Image 1 (cartoon, rainbow, N blue to C red):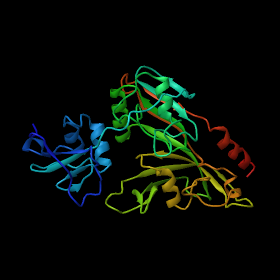
Image 2 (cartoon, helix red, strand yellow):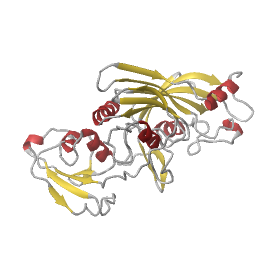
Image 3 (cartoon, rainbow, N blue to C red):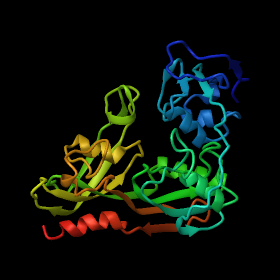
Image 4 (cartoon, rainbow, N blue to C red):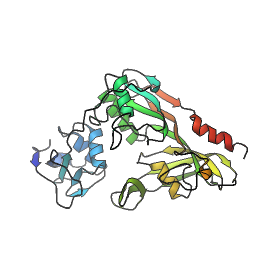
Length: 335
């Protein structure tokens, strides 16, 4: 059993997180019985944290220090380790239900599988406080998982605003937690269709490169060897290749599989290997004609396979390309 928690006023001066006036910090010293436990398991057992899923989120957001140092969730505790957890203030719960049509592919008492349209933000963020998927979910369902905080009810994972396709939603805390754990344990098979610039010769490949924040730009990510960068693996398989045209150097249609779920992961990895995604406003290249006038990234979550978190049923869904992306493929077919 862990010792009594001690509440502190602030973190060490050299820690970059700004906790704000409503945050608090808990300090727990690992006892002999805690030695060998994973950090996420240890933190998740603390009453103020409650769940392993929330513990993992705190660790990934840099809110957990072990002996004053950031550690991975797999870190194995030693007796005497000083673990400090910043408990952020509750996220805003002032969200209004909005009756926005949802393309739901499956729903029961525990989960929702839906296809998100391009242009829809998943949850409220600066500049996007209405019209989000969360607003639509609040109008659709009276019950949604609460583990991600008041502004992310039901959310299990995210898609970028202009990425379309299949997503999972947890209607109960237990479903939300188990689905998030399944994603972290790589037990959810998520596949995307991506059209990239250039001709990729290998039929298959793997990109294993850590991703971190781009210095001086909170909206962009980059391949990084920083200690704060997170491991990221993406595999790809060539579906079709298209010969160069007047305004471009050809294209390759890929099926990409995520083994991790970092922000902008596929987009950053494709840019890293010199084949950015067509139409990508942040990591792409070329003029509008070179991108076939597509003004959003050609990235679609088209396949998802997982085990139902409660019933144990094996579930598999596929989603056709939306009209704007299929139109680009139709234009390229003669090549």
